[in-house]
Image (tube, rainbow, N blue to C red; front, side, top):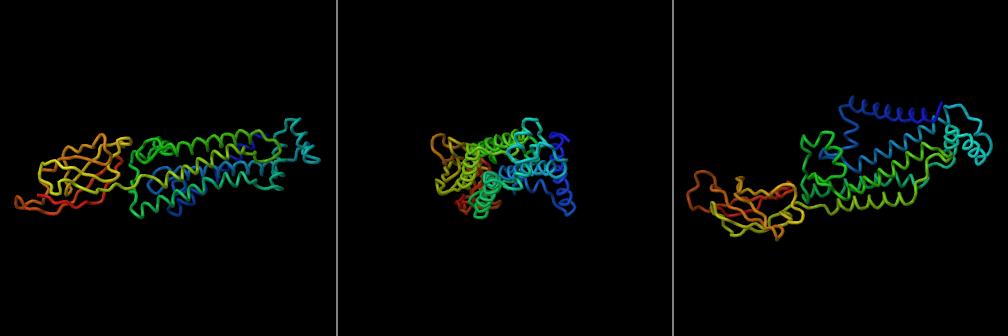
Length: 325
């Protein structure tokens, strides 16, 4: 049995294990992969994806070592003390022998601290990010915007790994993805060239980069944009087809306008010509709809109404009470 064959058998074992777990989950009326890859909004979760990635990679490596150490016939170069055996297998270009020595090394030393960090960082980032997001949704600080049908196809699913909910590239997510992928490629490239130490040593620099990017990823979740609010409407009484101004927070940012133009309604009817101030954040002007009050309301009657604004990111304010003629 060659080392390449061992690696393929290890990969096949991981695929089979995932398929079995998926089958059990579906038999119970659920799903495995969507649960471990997607967030509550139906979008691909960056942190969940890398928890699964590192679990599968380390699992593949350990299964490969297990196959070489326990199921393949012992190679002659592995006899003797460890240092001599490693030298003998290296000289003989015996990768299977080096995998067998790596398995014995793993049994005696276990997982080194770097792997505990590597496996723990995505998990900790995922737990922290979920806690922050869920807390903000529960408190109403941010709206929950579910994925649209178009966002549930393969292309958008991949883009969601490094994108914000509005589809724009998120620097924090992108950095987290890039540094984890670089570390994962390094891990695989080193493991398939065994040196008798089992799992390859991960350089402190790569560990540091993944740690920093995870911290930024979680920090970004903590300061994510809050739900927009309306704080004032001028004049205080809205007249049909008359201009008015709305101020608030999170309504419009000239530096980050969002993918769509802001919209506004009065009593559920769309306002006309909603225009954001090009120089002042969170100030919008609009023209009141021609008929704001319910049918049958006598002309000139002042009634309480509700105004709402949907900003460029698709988040909608709570109702703001206004007076309508």
